[in-house]
Image (cartoon, rainbow, N blue to C red; front, top):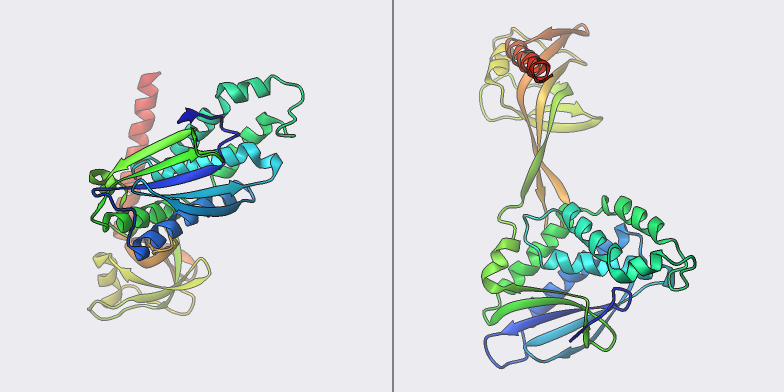
Length: 326
């Protein structure tokens, strides 16, 4: 195949390589893979505000090949090229690479290509009808809204599905043109590397709030694995009180709650990602209580005092270190 320019690339080819001479594949696995691919394409295009239409073409042999032709308005020709570049890199890059890095690579490859450099030098750009520098800035800004969890999960689903097809030995993802004889970008992933693209857990990085204020609706006054109920950021939540020290204060009657009582605490919000790539809250845990309120007056807990003193000492140490550096 001959190399083509980014503006001529309008088609992504998915090529499944087999360990035999067949040209067929399990329909359920094939459709699942295509669905996940389209989900990734939709997420990237929508967040970059490129209105695309995707057409499929008859399957090809040589293992099994499928083509997706992308159409966009003329003014989005360059942004469409970036969309295809990001999609191809997403399917051909392991989990360890962030979306930000992939987008940076895409922008660098596209906007620093000789073809685009020449267009930048022109006063009038008939092919694009827009200023390229503006498109580049807009792409950088909009790309930050791409849901990394969603595209990573859909990529994981893709490779998990294709990995279950025993005769597949490799997947190739290629940006090509109408004639399918030119190549702008190609990524090959062999089967032994599929595991590098598959998420091993649905758990994702939890959120930490070190000064969460929770209004207590229902504390737990007896021992056992019971959950407390409270209001956090305007929502009713159930949470596990992991601070044994504070639980003892409550269970021994040293801390009493009444209507409107609140605590200031270190709160962990655990999260999971579902099959569609949507993040769901899996539970809340209070690991330390900084202080509670008596008649709207904050009362520092012993563990809260220790935690505050540790932070103050660390801050002082950093300040002294900065001073020594100067």
